[in-house]
Length: 111
Image (tube, rainbow, N blue to C red; front, top):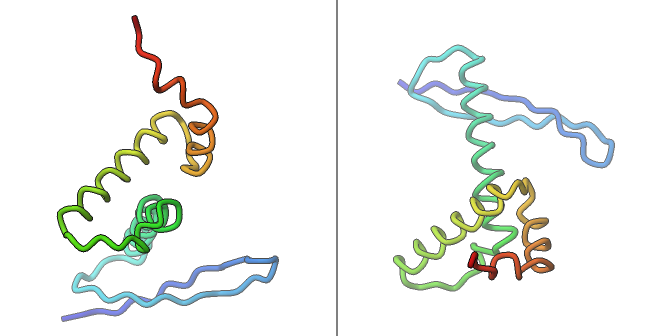
């Protein structure tokens, strides 16, 4: 048995509030608060990982034909994102800009 859920969110781009309705299908019967938490969790991953890989690293525009090469590059992007976040950058773009101006810090080895 499949159930459909409707989820409405309020968007405010350019100071013009609009309501967007999203529909989800699930085989589980869950309370609405639990469904809402799972939906937010999904979009959190989408915004923190997939969107960054696509927009910042242009991952979707790459013309890699070998599956293993694509997997390796995706893993490399994930490692890079984790390094920036471990340095306290919420914005990967800011981290890239900072590293471009302070690259010698990463090249310095303790003696």
